[in-house]
Length: 156
Image (cartoon, rainbow, N blue to C red; front, side, top):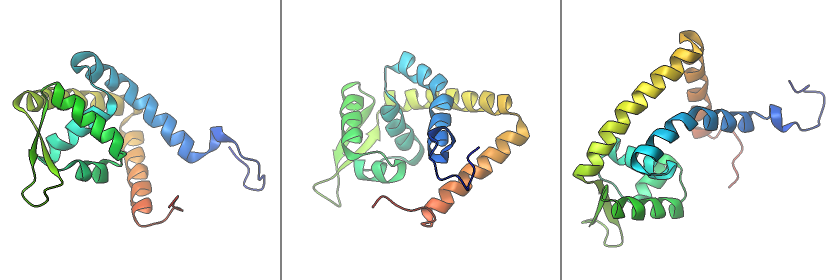
């Protein structure tokens, strides 16, 4: 652990780095599932997951909810549309925007992947243990809330 009196930086003990590494490690197994079964990327899965959970919305909405860059969402949307998993329609409120929604095939894929995600999450929580999983969940939600309230310095 880093000594607070020692000003030297240690990446291996830098909390944002550790969180990122943990997120990568935790998501790798599930990534294999959506990649192998549906030939989609993480961003494409996240776009589908948002549409599956919240229903039809714009790409801008997806960017805001999921904190994914606009260009990545645009590429994901194009691929999902080409694969027949997503459809676009003109927005009635904003002529510049398109409403994105899952097709019937996209809804079926989301239902399948959603159940697989629940199973994967259960297995991960079981591996961590009930108390550790609850503590981790609480801590992660605290970090998210802290950030939402402007508790950590922003890059902007």
